[in-house]
Length: 362
Image 1 (cartoon, rainbow, N blue to C red):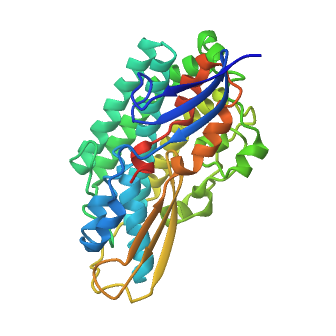
Image 2 (spheres, rainbow, N blue to C red):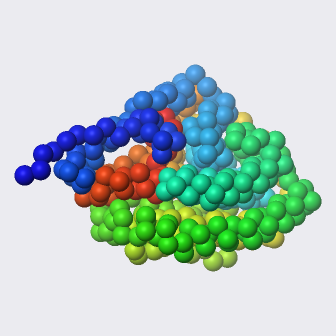
């Protein structure tokens, strides 16, 4: 009978961009159980609502995660706007969607580079991050920042984008689309990549639903839970949004979903720019949330659904701010994907789930 051994994986590991720790229970070369441990970088950001007013906290919210910075500021702002009963200008809703989908492209291309590095395809890693630089150039052109943008206000956007800027964004994305198509072919058709991904880390559709998995992790198991289809914020103006799903339920399916979502996000940005209305991009917001008032909102971040909850107390400081991030939900699904795999496949399974520890340990 094989003896069980516990092997620590992380928090410092070459394939981990952030400090995730797993205790892997192993028999020979097979992982029997994976036990995640979190808490290494907990920062207590939600506690800061008691010392930062609801306008100041938006700059704290976008620092929850550098890759998802814009989405967190957007989701927080929408929650406070719901709390105050504020309706922002239509043009601001369009601009938020444009920048949020650009963030999704950034996140997915960055992740694809990390995945390529994980299975030893160094040239593919460099090509992915070369494209990422062009996306960051677009952010810098539109907001002045490349990682933290400070472009969202409670009540709209900090600044408008003129027609020349939006036109340049479209032409840049079309150039990215051309180069990205070649990268997609490597991820989805190269035999060495397929050998590392197909049939590995399987999570059935039933298990994905049972554990409440979200984002590309869930959509790779054919679970249609993309929050964008609900039409919140500016997404209600999309003509026909259909989430990208795959029923193979393995690492390859999760890679495929993310790869195709980049092209879908480019289409969404171009549609929103084509239909963006004229008008202001912000309205003045005064006053404070009523005591006992509560509001929530949901947003589809690159890694999945983020749920925001806020409670007012009659002052400019929120009584409570709670953020439920996708990785904290997906940890149970990650443990399921790792159970029964070969030890050599742990790296790829963890990477295709794309855990964000900064979001998890707020």
